[in-house]
Image (cartoon, rainbow, N blue to C red; front, side, top):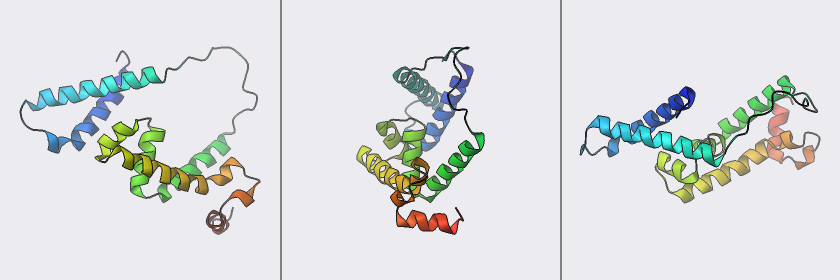
Length: 160
């Protein structure tokens, strides 16, 4: 992996995968061989994912951002997103976090959760639609008319 942090993350992914797939171990080989293959696959997955989404380091010097980031507003946004995610059903939340936040593919997520690819796609679609309603006020804070009634009622209850 050539990066200790990436290696540690890959090992953590591998251990989660081994835990989830422990029932599929057929004892045709030693446990250490089985675990080794899982770790190698996790490392390869991370390398492939990194190559698919290459990053370019920012220059050390250069223009400052046009608008400085507001740490309080960022924290408020983070809390609003976490609250909205908490309101989703567990199956939708898991699919969205794995695909949209962690960056796993639909196929990888389906394998991790033990469901079909189409199930992950529909869970993500339903979850995203619900999040769009719950978080609509973040996109256009001055346009409460665009926020569905149930979200408006929730915001009034919370005193926003």
